[in-house]
Image (cartoon, rainbow, N blue to C red; front, side, top):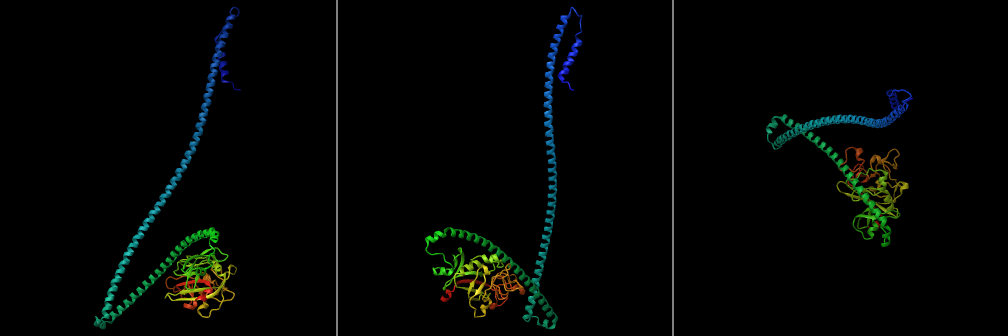
Length: 460
C-alpha cells in the first residue's frame, strides 16, 4: 500500500518534533508543556502545508515533462518514417540515374555506329562516282573507236587485225548488257515510285473524302432544316436526277444536289450533253482512289465527285428505280481512243444484292462483256461473294467490286495501273479491263459510267 508524499513528510516532521522537546517534570510545569506542544504543532501544520504545495508543484512539473517527452517521442517516430522514405527515394533516384546513364551510353554507341555507317556510305558513294566516271571515259573511248570504224578510219588495222574488232564488239555487247541492267533497275525504281505516288494520292483522297463527308453532312443538316421552308417558298420540288435539271435549264456539267423519290438529298456530278443530263455513277482517270473496297463502301459510295469516285449502289438504285433508265459505259485506251456503249437496264435493291439486269440483249460483240442474264447478276465484293463461280471469289481474285457473272468478261473497278501493265499475267488480270474491246489483259486509261432516263435516246 503506497503512502502519499505529503503524509510521509508530516510523519517525519512529527517524529523529529517529538524528539526535540523533552518532557519536564510533571506537575508544576504542566501548562507550560501544553503551550509549547501547541505552538510546535502549528509550525508543523504550516510546514506540512508548504511541503504539500511543493509536492503538488513537483507533480504538475513531472506530468508536463511526461507530455513533452511523449510529444518528442511521436515526432521522433515521424522523423524516422520520413528519413526512411527519403532513403527509399534516394535509392530510386540512384537507380534512375544508373538507367539514364546506361541509355546515354547506348545512345552514344548508336551515334558512333551511325557515324561509322555514314562514313562507309560516303566512301562507297565516292567509289561509285569514280566507277561511273571510269565507265563514262570507257564509253567515250569506245564511241571514238566505233566512230573511227564506221567512218573508215583505220580500215587497214581492221583488216589486218581481226581480233581487235572482235574485242571491241565484245566490249560493246557487255556495255549494252550493263545498260540494259541499269534500265531495268530504273524501271523497278520507277514502279516503286509510282506505287508510292498512288499511296500518297490515296491518302490525300481519303483526307479529301473526310472533308467532303463533313461538308456533305453539314449540307444535309441544312437541307433538312430548310426543306419545309423551301417547299413553301418554291412551287417546284428538288430534281430527282440530272436529266430533270437539264430540262429545267441547267446546261453546265458539275456538282448538283438531287433528291430522288423516297430518298434524302445528296450531291452528284452531272454530265450535261446536247441531248440531256447524265448522272455519273463511276469515274476512273488517274488511280488516285483505291477501288478495292468492301461491301459497305460500295453500298454508300466513296471517292471525290470531282475526281475518281463510286456514287454508291444505294444512291444508284434510288435514282434509277423511278422508271426506264439507260446505262452508258464509256472508256478510253492509252492512245486516247474512246468507245462507249448504252444498255437499257434495271437495278434491283439491297434485298437482291443490287443485281443488274440488262433489259435488251446487245447486238454487237463489244457489248457482250456485261452479262445479259434475265435473272440479273448480283453485285459482289471480296467480303461478300455473290458471283456465279462456286469455287472462286472473283472480287478477291481480280480486285474491286463488280457485277461478276464469271471472272473474265469485264471489271471497271479493278486496279488502276499508272505505268504500263506489269509483266506477270496474274497481276495484269487485276486491272481495269473490257475484254471485248482491247482484250482481257489490257488496262484501260479512263472509264466513266452514267445513267439517264430512256427518253434521252430518242433525242440523240
